[in-house]
Every structure is written in structure tokens, then in C-alpha cells.
Image: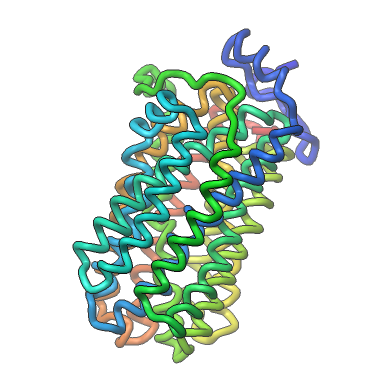
Amino acid sequence: MSRPQGESIELGSRRPDPPAVSAVVNHEQDELPEGGYGWVIVACCSAIAFFYIGLPYSWGVIQLRLTESGLAKPSSLAFVGSVASCLAAIGALVNARILRAIGTRNAAVVASILYGGGQIMSSWSMTSIAGLLITNGIIAGIGVGIFFLCCGSLPAQYFKRKRGLANGLVLGGGGLGGGVMSVTINYLLDRVGVAWTFRIIGLTTLAVTLPASLMLKERTRRGTAHIEWSYFRDPKFILLFLGGAIAMFPVLIPAFFIPQYATSLGISTSTAAFILAGFNLSSFFGRVGFGALCDYIGPVSSLILALLTSAVSMLAIWPVSKSIGPFILFSIISGAGNGGFFSTMPSAVGHIYGGHRVPIALAMIVTAWSAGYFLGAPIAGWILEKYGGSAAGTQAFRPAMYYAGTMSLGSAGLIFGVRQILTPSILSYA
């Protein structure tokens, strides 16, 4: 039986049923299997996330090599890495309509072809920023956007009590992918060069994501994708909408600039790739850990903790990382908070609005992420260049660190406002 919003529950207990949006939604949620084929869905979505999350989070390795080759400045190359994620956000409502029109399985197959094909086509565009923006940015980015909605909303059709864990496992695949891909890409760049690295990545992406996509199956028909303007009369939605938008500005900065900061410390490119892998592997544990935490203290509370973890890492640890030890500590803590954000946000939306409304509410919230995805990392690059670039030493990175950490802290404050509306008690489940 659903528990009214705001009712206090002792922290550490299993999470209660999310508040019912209507009798129909409540009935639907009560019949969720909490397992069965749902675990196949989780496994397939996790395999897909390994690539559509893992590769963007490994872009810093390629960005460093392209910067060293003289192709462009870090701020320009950061745009290439940001475009795919930006399109995932800005096209969320359109992608939701695609899923409604052709179904999740068919949409995922299309996404697989676009994403893998975009990587392969990038191999013929590696000497042109404009070419990379089209192939690795726009074409692959459309695939990322479709994948995001497929994998972000489908577990809600199979899980309620274990929804946080399911989302954590799905998105944890992306953290694992980022860790593996960071090292793999660096190895391939050393052995076969940039062009063949793109081709091998693209072919591998197709080989894994196509079969996984064919195994996806919906339990219920998705609602029609549209902008639900009435949500903007809800203070909780407004705060969640703005909090998510602000959180996106710093989210790609560590992944894009860890390799570059490492070289400013005198660390080799291969060691820098391993540190980035550590960031991404920590993201895996953050996605799974914070996702599971949602089921005990609540998804909104877990979301706040994830954002605070990111903020503390960038404001307190990164600025004093003048040797490899503190820098590795920063990478681990930052990765955990970064990953935790992505696994807790879908659960928070489901907790507040019910599983039936997740696709619409999540699509609207994700649309607001586009500005942060597109401009967040390039702004950090511009700030870095203004203070002398990586050649000026680690001090030149500090303003960008403070910019990133402050944005995460501000986002945490807005999400805390959502929690206060749900329940003013700090010890309550929310």
C-alpha cells in the first residue's frame, strides 16, 4: 500500500511504495514483476550503457591526443565530446515520440546503427573539427539520445521496490565501460592510431549493442510524448528541473580534463588514462551504490548526497592535488558522486511522479540538461585558456575547478528544496 508523501520512515529500512499518481498507476505498479525478465532487461541495458556512456566519458583520452597533434585547442575539442550528450538532452521529447511510434526495441536498433556508425565515420574525419562534430557529435549523438531514454525508462516497467538498484546496475554499466574504454582507447591509440581506434570502437559497439537491443521488451505501451505544462505549476518539478540543468555544467569536466591535468603534473599519458579509468570505475560503484541507497534512504536524499560528493571533490580535493596521490583520491571521489547523480535522478523522478509518468517527466527534465552538456566543459576549457592553459601548470586549472564545484553545490541546494517540500524531517524517507 502506498504511503502518503511526507510521512516519516526510519532511515535504513527498505523504501516504501512510491506515492500513487492515480488508482490506475497504483494498480499498474502493484503488478510489476520485480524480477524475471526484468533482470534480462537490466543486463541488456547495462551492456548498451557500457558504450553510450562509457565512450563519452573516455573522450578525454582522445581529446588529449588530438590536442597534442595540433588539431585544435581543448575548448574546441571539448565541444565535440559535448555535442553527443547535448543532443541526448535537447532531443529527449522527440526521442520519446520515436519510442512511442516504433517501440523501444526498434528504436534501440536504430540507435545502435547510428552510434556505432558514427564512430566508424569519425575515422575519416579525424583531421577536421567540423567532420568530428557531424560524425562523433551529431550522428552518434542522436543514437546516444535514443539509448538514454530506452535504458533510462524501461527498468521502471519491471521494478518498483528494487527500482533504485535496477537503475544503478543499468547505469553502472556506463561507469564500467568508461573505465575499460579509457585504458583500451589509450592502448589502441598507441598501437593503431586514431583512425583505426575509431573503427575498432565502432565495430565493437555494433557487435554488442545490436543483439542487446533486439532483446529489449516493453511491458506496457508508453504514453504520448509531450510537454506537460502543468508540471511547471509544481514547485517540486521546477526545483528538480533547474537543479538537474545546473548539475550538467560540471558533469563532464573531470572526465574531459583529468588526462590534461595529469600531464601538467608530469604524469605520462598512459598513467593519465589509468587515472581516468579509475574515475570511470569509481563512477560504476557510485551508480550502483547510490542507486541501491535510493531504496533505503530515498532517491531524493541519495541525489543530494551524490551532488555534495561531487562538489566536495572539486572544491576541496582537486585544488590541492599537486601530486599523484591526492589526484587519484579526487578522481575516485569525484567519479562516485558523478555516477551517483545519473542513477538517482530517474529514481527521484519515479518516486515523485510514479513509474507511469517517468518517460514524460524525465524527458522534460533531461531536455533542460542540454545547455550544461553543450557549454559546461567548453566553458571550463575557456577558463583554462584564459589563465594560461595547461602549460601554465596546475594553478591555471583552479578557476575551472571552483566553477565546476560551485555549480554542483548550487544544484544540491535546489534538490534539497525538493526534499523539504516532500518532508521537512531530515530523518524521513524521501
